[in-house]
Image (cartoon, rainbow, N blue to C red; front, side, top):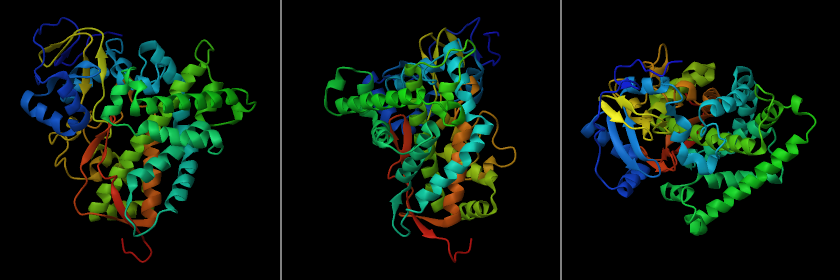
Length: 451
């Protein structure tokens, strides 16, 4: 495979540019705060001022280059994995996910992990998960109190955590998993300040950083205990949960995953497998509650079993409110982007948020229009909430299946209204963007309603 890219705006060989990209001159600490807490406002301003290629200095990566041109981003996604290291680009996640995580590894190590994980998320596996998702969703919505405002984000977090626990472990009862539920909620619920402790061992001796470290260690104890118990099970071949599948398979040399590798893949699935989908669903309810025409169309789709439209609702939610606002690739050699030279060791950061909010790709980008995703949908490369190239999220299909099933179950039963007329702004929470008030809605039974 050649390492030369074909897009004129991106070169990996025969470089001629010498100038670095433009960018703000603020101190690293200031840029880190702006990026960590206000990136949804700050990054669009930087693009308007500096263009599609902008250099930033943020902790812990320090040297980062934001990309907002679709052609540049396509070239990065299509670039040789030995040049564009996604695992190193995700280094901020390493303290939580672990060094063996499929999100944190590159090249052959990543390929091995991905191949071992893929069977758990192929088409046959997804079809097997549908009934489970439906059952757990119906159990969740039966507990909702009509007429009382509530945070749909909190309820979706609880639901998607329960779903991923069942998908990963196959069971949902027992003191070990009950304790794990609470610990995972704590691990996910971190803010920008908490992230500092991930990369500073000294901070982990104090206050909230110490409590977080204790929660992480206890989570590891529980996961290793579950792995050890499952290894002793004599019926792995009859089980269909992810942990059992991973214990039953090996790589090309017949080598299976070590306990440490299993721990890292499990925590990655548990953390990444529920938070992002929960947030996307909460944003979907937030928008539907404020758009009567779109709510009526989605309700008809739920009644008719039109999962194509319900999936379009989920995709439009992910477009309008990207849960993860960018992806990252760390460079192993100098490259040239848009006439600028970016040195090896820098991280290029394709911006999901900027591309998906660009009117050049999505007319009236601030409007919630699921119809964008019907027919041919948006142009290729202008919607990528699951990343792109060989690093596209393994759980993308599961996430969309889950969102579609949940939307159908909720809309078949309830009518949605907002608790306030004014839309909720987004706020930064760890590496995600979430509804500032939890996407609060009011549900009323549909009995007697005309939709």
